[in-house]
Structure formats: C-alpha cells, structure tokens
Length: 168
Image (cartoon, rainbow, N blue to C red; front, side, top):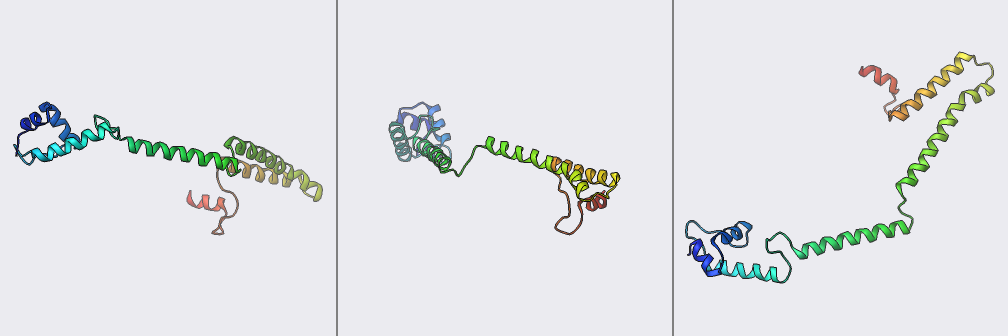
C-alpha cells in the first residue's frame, strides 16, 4: 500500500492531480490513510491515458467520443426518418393544419348562425321570440366551444348545464 504522494511520484503527477483523478473515478479510491494500491492505480491510469489518446474520452473525463458519435447518429437517423415521413405524405406542416381547421371553424360558425333564418323559412309560424331563443342557444354553444367547454348531453346522460348548476 502507498500514500497519495507515492502514487503521484510513481505516475509522474502532482499530488493534486492524483486527488482529481480519484474524484473523477479514474483512479481507485484508497482504503484508508496510505491505502492506495500502486498496481491498481498504475493500471487504471494507463487505461485512462489510452482512452484519452484514442479520442474516446477527453482529458477531463467529460467527453466520451463514442457516446457523442452515437448521439449524433441517433439524431441523424431521426432527421432522416422525419424527412422520409414528410416525403411519403405521413406528416404535414402544422401551419397547413391550422389554416385548414381555421377555415372549417369559420365556415361552421357561419352555417350555424344561419340556422335560425333557415328554420324560420321552413317553420313560418315561429314567433320572433322563439327564433331569438334559437339564436341564443346557438351563440351559447359557439361561445362554449370557443372557450373549450363541452356542450350538449354528456355520456352519463346529464346535460352540461345541469351538471354545472349542481356543482355550483
């Protein structure tokens, strides 16, 4: 067994560098005071230097070239897969979806707002109050949809308004 200073002299390092390498996990930790194994430290340091020399890890132990290359390869594979999916027509730009659905919503709103007038032509005996009530119901439904709230009967058979009143 050797002291930290003896390990430093044996590996031609400073005492501080031996501490840093042990902290990084490059050198095995000592077993108590003066409990460093010269053979284990020498082999670990040689393996570390080989890794640095081959470019598989950096001098500070932070960079692992093999892992970084694997990350790059994964990113390049994902990019190629996305490009292929777009080329096959499996993916579409979000702007196109937003534009399409925006136009659909505007058209649906216009159609629903015209329902009271159409209903009045098909059922001419309706009073203006009844037509106004129909307009209010349609406007309320459109407002709730715009606010992201559900409208109409729920799967449990209750009406949303009844459920809201019961929870209030």
